[in-house]
Length: 297
Image (cartoon, rainbow, N blue to C red; front, side, top):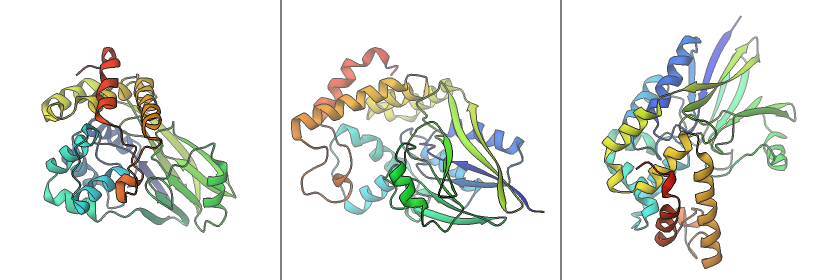
């Protein structure tokens, strides 16, 4: 009889504080396999510490869109002057050469068989790290499951509350957001798949508490606030029960930018500029002034 417990951890976003608590919980529950679904680093500036932990626990690791930003920054020699990009530039400069090389080699998807159960792991979707699979997007979920040779499609990226369902006799599972879930105050999401006798016997979706005061002090100590306080404040809002503030800020920035330019990406651009939601500095900083009562830095 084969019994395997697989912990699926997605969207850490550099929050090594949350990750450590998740891993403690997983160890108590006798997890014996770990899969990490990308967005390991950025938005919080603890990339090296986070990557060292992840690499210690598993070699089944995907890249997410946040890793893709770092790769594109390096490959295309972007001159990123917007304040909005300072987080990525800070992280790139902070990462060790070993960790940069590790990120460059990460795959965008993994097919793994555990005890007769075949699972396709992705960050966003089987198509790309950017595409989002939301529960209500049934047409898109049907598209990716109707001819799926695997038994399950497992992903993250959306920062929705973790969920799972079945379509076309396939399991579809959003493993949750470990590092910056906007739905809770100091809680991390992750999923355990309990596999036994050629089937997924149980799906356990967990909420684990961590100390946001530790995160706050680490942000201050990191030096990131000299570069960009805006994203750090928005991220801290997200992890301390004020996720709605981050959502409103970005929604308003998007609306202003579209009214101004009729689009969010640069004209006739390739790479990150073809899809990244880019906001002018006056919009970014103006909204920071508007929402400053919610900011702690």
